[in-house]
Length: 525
Image (cartoon, rainbow, N blue to C red; front, side, top):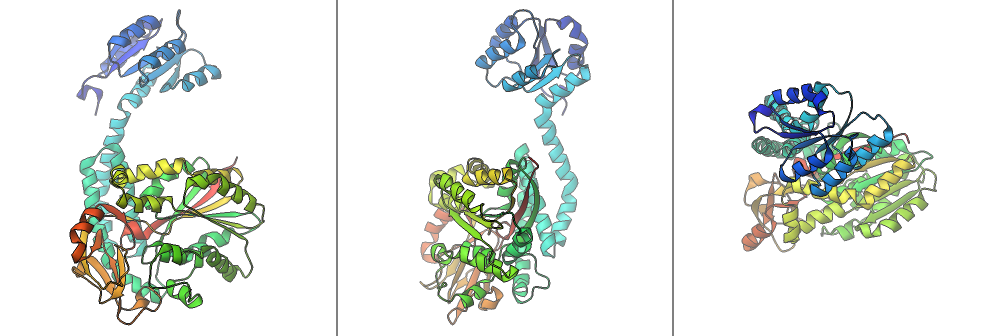
């Protein structure tokens, strides 16, 4: 959209040689901008007190008040005024002082009308131009993306479509394209349906043969951590319950410190901490863990009891793969109040050559669970976009970010991943179960267990379909599909009111199963 197709943006140009800039003024006016010109800072400040301007072009070297003095006074009047400093000085200190006082751009005379137009257009029209471009890019891609979704038949193909839809969701949401966002939501809904039907057929086959399965939770340490082992320590960082879109908004914060190579893996089922994270640290499926450690598992799915041995599982896996004892320092962090002590212990562990620094950060998972219990948190993180914003705000101030920056400064490699994602659940599905059924809202194990809508869940009585430990006779395993969550008929209204629009995990959806793995290589210092 050109400036002439909307109300003209108002520009004030302040320069003691304004008569010499007449060609520049006419050039801007010809392109639809309203431009006022004035020759000194005091008159400019008086004018700005009574008239709104979208942009001020401010000469730095003027008789009377210098441009930087005018800028300081202007910032007191209007802290959000957009200002471009124009000066004859090429000295670094002048430029740095202007930038330090938050100018939006900086031009050195002599400037051509085209240079000025470029800066003005970027500042005043940049967001609308970017919005138009995103819309055009998505429109051009829509048909091809729809066809890719319809044709997806393999793990890689589903992951490619899901990853692209996540990226479009973030781009379109950032540009305010609500109508096109509805199209992405519709495509994601269709993808979830197709993905669920495909996983129901494919996953039991993966559990019986490694021939055609994708990289799963059990493969991460072997594929990513072990190749980095040597004399230098290696970080292995797990951010619990991190969706791909949450990683996408954290990624730019790490980019100044690391070269980032991104991949993905499929979380094992159920997509829940007791199973997926144990699989990561052990390199084993639940039935293998249970056979090796029969005292660890019972009929509950409580994280505290089932995830108490991750350090031991990691040490055993590394020895099994490498044939030697690899030093492991393990930390599970629930609160950033522990930050100083965590960093001190990590720094001490780094003195051991060839060690693996394994760090599990539970904040994202705690935030996701806590959202269902807290009306305030539910309002703050009311949808995917808000959850991304909250995640980025946490990460930017977190112990995890501080530890990663320090790792980069010391030149240490990092593998960063998660155990599973979560999905915003909207649709309740009634489930009939005995009292001994597990409590999770996205998966349930128990006897005489069934869902009212058979299309809303994956059900099996064969534990080999999920590589689960042998259960009691008549045990049924039930996993929710798409954005469904399980409710009991006796608590239907209570569960609907409490858990609808909650981020849950444990079931089958791209958001829960297709999760990121990032290899972080420190940038040269």
